[in-house]
Every structure is written in structure tokens, then in C-alpha cells.
Image (tube, rainbow, N blue to C red; front, side, top):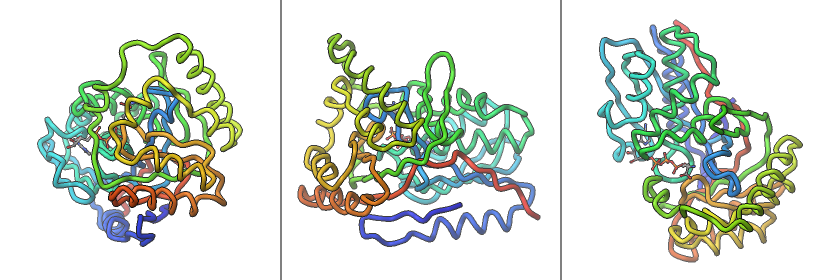
Length: 324
Ligand SMILES: Nc1ncnc2c1ncn2[C@@H]1O[C@H](COP(=O)(O)OP(=O)(O)OP(=O)(O)O)[C@@H](O)[C@H]1O
Ligand SMILES: N[C@@H](CCO)C(=O)O
């Protein structure tokens, strides 16, 4: 199911949906994958937690070719290199030894905090694995897609690619990935500013006081139970983190105001989405609309335009095979 994006102006974007339908219906010897945006960290789970979102998403179309060629259209495409050595999907094609013509239609704006580079990498991993019949499981594709992340941020962190591939809520550790299906309601509000993951990683402290670590572990455990119970109150209560998040909020103009506004409108928890500058609010379904409006107004009050996606934790990358 494809849910259209809700924007700050509360209009519906249809151009990407149209491109997607054309790709599905015209494809000859090719394969199309819709790979969702994701929100990593969720406050207490820095580099560990992630969720797949219903909207927005990247649409990746792949076709076998003697060597990899990449074209990029859509949201923020002017900032995304088509050189396979600099695009996350190039590293994925290399890792799978699966050269292809890869067309990326970006729905996830880069450097906004919704795992844009990861959505492309995850979509390419799922698509090329199927196109070349490599036979890898979704779990096995996670480290492959993470190689794409190393291209942009210097580290192969997997907390965005894991939920984009597997869907739901994911926990990434050195021992592998744990996945939980859930459909918690969220609002992701993206200001019209950018923060690169590389820069946001530069402010992460090298050590933390034990008290802060203890509190964050408690939060993370609470959040995890909340996800397994589909309980937005528990999830919201478990998002607090005093170690990384305070350093990151300083990079986001208007963050405190937006955080406060979302809580007042009914959010059960609010934090930086991924590396920012997007802000993620967890909520009950009934409060989504009010929270989206409040977050947009709060950014507006500091002179920053924004858009809000009212969505929920959803499925991972979906394959649409050639129907010709
Ligand atoms: N396929 C791709 N899609 C998006 N960005 C890409 C892609 N390939 C390379 N990039 C580069 O990656 C950078 C964006 O990645 P970055 O990790 O900063 O943001 P992000 O992917 O939106 O993640 P986050 O959720 O951490 O904000 C940009 O410099 C962009 O040019
Ligand atoms: N865990 C990574 C995710 C980036 O989207 C970070 O916060 O730097």
C-alpha cells in the first residue's frame, strides 16, 4: 500500500507515485523496489534503534547492465552524485557483484534525518539481490546495504538500512539484527534546513557519566517493551537520552520550541530523527494532525519552513517485479 505524503502545506504529492506506477507497468526485464524512509536512534537507541516509516520512500528501478550507471531524480536529486563511487547504491552493486543501470527516484530528501542515503542503499540491495538471483535473506542484505552508508558518513552504521529492508522496529548490534513488527503512529517534521550525518557525528561525546548511561539503558528497555506492545505511551516514555541528543539539538534551529509544541499537542515522546534536522514525534493516532500542525507552526515561528509526514511504523522494502 502506498500512502501519499502529507506536506507542511497539507497537500498531496503525486508525481513520485506516478513515476512509480509507470515504472511498474512499463518495466521490461527490470525490477522496481519501493524502499521506505526510516528514523534512527529514537533518542535512547543511538546507532541501535530504527523504524521504517509509511512515507516518504525512494523508488529504485534496476536493469542488468555490463557496468553500473546511476541516474537520480526527485527530492534533493541535485545534491546527490550519480558517480557510482559516491552514491550509496554504487557500493551495494559492487558488494553484490551486480552491475546495473539503477534509476533512483528520491522521495526521501537527503540530509534531513529520514535516512535518505540508506533508503536508496536498502532498495538497491533488495532489488539487485532479486535481479541477479543472489539468494541472500533480508537479514543478510543488511550489512551489504550498510556498505553504502560508509560511502557518505565514513561508517557502515546499519540502523537506517535495517528497518528500510526489514520493516517495523529494528535493533542493530554487533551480534545481528532483531526485528519487531509494530505500527506505532508518528509525525516526522522536516525543516527546510540540512545537517549532514558526518557533521552530526562530529558532536557525539566520546564518553558519558555512568548516571546518564544508566538512565539511557532504562529508557531503551522501556521503549523496546513499548514497541512489542504497540504502546505509544511506553515508547514515548522510553525516548529520553541525555548523552547524544542534547549535543545534536544544538545543531537544529528552533528544536526546543518544536519539541515543546509537539508535547503540548499530545505527543508521547519527541526527539531528533536520525542525525537531524528532522524531528520525530511518537503519538496516538488521534493526535497526529494537531501535532503536525503544532510542529510546523513552531518552526515557522523561528522563520523556518517545514513539512510534516503523518505516518506510522510500516513495512520494509517491497519488490514490484517486471509485469511484461
Ligand atoms: N542515493 C543517495 N541518496 C541520498 N543521498 C546520497 C545518496 N548517495 C549519496 N548520497 C549523499 O549522502 C549525503 C546524505 O546522507 P546523510 O547521511 O548526510 O543524510 P541522510 O541519508 O538523509 O541520513 P540521516 O537520516 O542521517 O539524515 C548527501 O551528501 C548525498 O549527496
Ligand atoms: N545513528 C546514526 C544515524 C544517522 O541517520 C547517527 O545518528 O549518526
